[in-house]
Image (tube, rainbow, N blue to C red; front, side):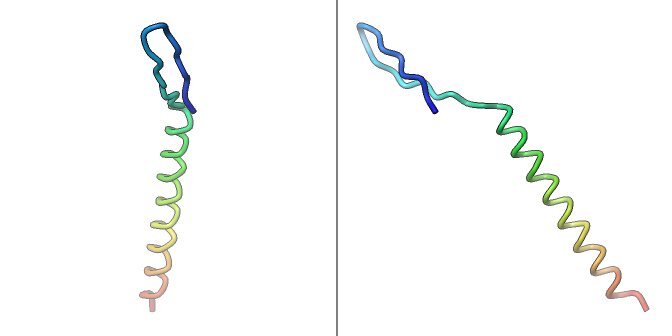
Length: 50
């Protein structure tokens, strides 16, 4: 998404960055990675128990 700014001298396109969405996406990515690392470690430890 962007904002189109029209003036007498020039026309500019100013991007709109939604920081909240970027932060939430980063948090989701970290949570997903923590889940899979924990899952994998548990599976490996269960396999090596006697």
